[in-house]
Amino acid sequence: MKKSRRYQDLTKKLEKQQNYSLKEALEKITQLANAKFDETIEISMKLGIDPRKSDQMVRGSVILPHGTGKDVKVLVFVQDDDTAEQAKKAGADYVGGDELVEKISKEGWVDFDAVVSVPQMMSKVGKLGKILGPRGLMPNPKLGTVTPDVKGVVEEIKKGRVEFKADKTANLHVPVGKASFNSEKIYDNIIEFFREVIRIRPASVKGAYVRSVHLSSTMSPGIKIDVTDLQQAIQ
Image 1 (cartoon, one colour):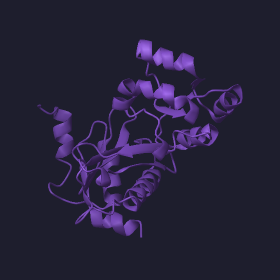
Image 2 (cartoon, rainbow, N blue to C red):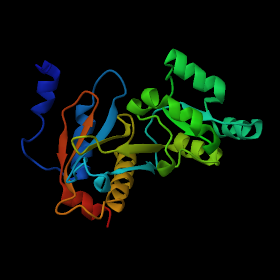
Image 3 (cartoon, rainbow, N blue to C red):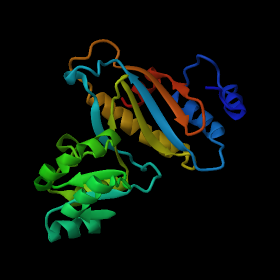
Image 4 (cartoon, one colour):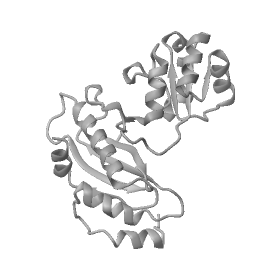
């Protein structure tokens, strides 16, 4: 696909094959993210894992210190009024039980960004797998989104908790802020995310775990970050 003139001009501002330190990359992304809207800043990582092996799957969640800059819509499946009230007070946008399951099932409604469920509802919510699963919205006990403590989880999500999962090509993609953020906030978010990725490294992975890291905005080319610099930053 042919790149736009704007994209080609932005690419010329980067040194080919150069690995930038994280701070240098943040300076560059500030220059490149000049679209007419507040671009999302995203970090991408190529991991040295085999996604086909269950013991090498990398999946988790992390609370970004400064959030993503996005107003996240949270849906919570509950079974009783008390839990529903707790979810609403925590900031949940949609709270309910069977009626929400039916709305999603019959209408294909997915106007939300995160889903939390009490354990008792999962026998019904599980039937929505074909709709929620491909969108990464299925509640998962390993990620803490199937829990009796819906209040705590909703508060975390609203504060900036993001989930991540390596795709079929062993890549991770996570939003770490907006172009309107100052570079210190994006730096803090990236360090927190990278620290968590390193923490959950599968024991069976041999050799280099993080192969490459790129930083980009919605409309910019990727900036290659020096992995060693990142590793030193979290020590």
